[in-house]
Image 1 (tube, rainbow, N blue to C red):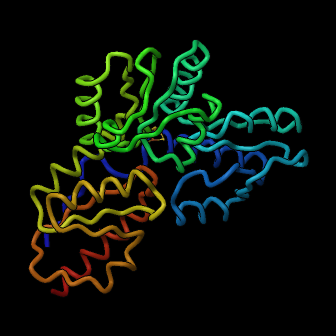
Image 2 (cartoon, rainbow, N blue to C red):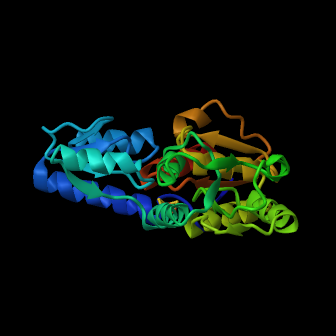
Length: 280
Ligand code: F3S
């Protein structure tokens, strides 16, 4: 069986930077507190906790310092850390920070905020906190038809960094055709677009796509949704989930992985497929 790995897959710039920062601080301090999971990947989190990372969901004055994850935290968490005298090690990805700033500046200048994305995702909650939790949410072009907005007011629309790039186009077309009072910011991160585009390209050439990522990882889920439109696809967290898979009739397998999937997990999957190919 031929195995082709997607040109862009695995750790993105922001996740890599957060993990490198955490490792550096743990070397220095022995242990490090992280406010929530640094990334959505159980295996990576396990490795980090073996190195001294302690994941917490609160801020206590006994923490010397606390790391904020790549997809950001709510605004009040910074205030809380300051009040408790806890040093903030901010690993919020620059692309997420840019959305937070755009929303905050526009909200403060009187505009209303629309966010395309998953309202329960921590990145989106953090962005919404910059608008005092007043944002309107959409997830599809159908939602644009249901928008209940005041035509005399000004709005801005931002996107979750991992938003589906195909859905982005349909939403933008509909908004432009219907509304003159919504300014659109394309805030989908380029790492997301590159991963999605190269996964789709690969899906068109193979018999099976294997998408590797944590079930909680929204960008991995989106890769799966996209590839499944073109070819039979499986969404796995690691090689164990492939053990019961029947590869009969599969000559070419494509592999892609979300931005929070570590290289060692991808390599384990590749090694596993190579091992079964030999025995076929
Ligand atoms: Fe940042 Fe994009 Fe990754 S927003 S955390 S580089 S997916």
